[in-house]
Length: 298
Image 1 (cartoon, rainbow, N blue to C red):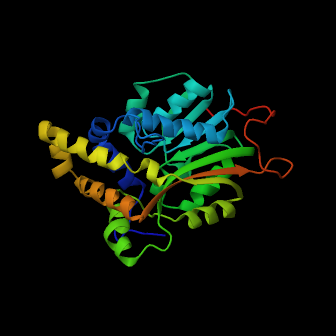
Image 2 (image 1 turned 135 degrees about the horizontal axis):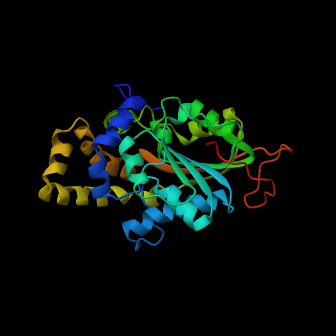
């Protein structure tokens, strides 16, 4: 596990997203995650939605299912899947600014809450499906992140995680100059490898039903962000103030590091598909459940 030399916590994560909210939305939009390119001809907007749709496909979402979006950002993934797949979603974010944006863009069956996933207050076995798109990296206690997901999922529940991962056996140079600074500048308490994530998932009681490394298909996110940020810096005073003088201005340094980390293989991007054993002890097969769907807590 890569751990930054300056410890990070949920307060620092919330402050990062609250302060940099205008930059995130102006540079990348309302989806605070990578794009996923299949042909290379997709627009960035199409690519970010392709990642959301991939998550929906991996989960085998069924209309009416109760879902939880762990680290939901502006609620864009929750809104898209609620509308396109007919599911009900509760989302958790640490950022008050992100929640305000979500509240200003409501859709039926989506509830966005400002709350730490590690103290989520949800009832045991209360949801059918969970996903976490680039939020596990911000969890101070990653084993507990997995344990809480297993606790709130009903038997047969499914869980998909899209995660920034460290290269297995990364060299000392890559750790010192790329991975550790990316953690520090991006407010990541730690960054794990594929093997570490799988070990934590198994320890929490999940079965691992799929894994895909899509690093090459998401890497172009960061060169696009770099070009857009430069253009915005040239014309927008508020962006210059935040990027060059704000509390979280150091994150701007991570963009060239992220580009290099993908090009050198120091950082990977993985999609994990997990399942919680059903009542019979067997993992759930997406789309085959006939059980009554439990509701979300008020």
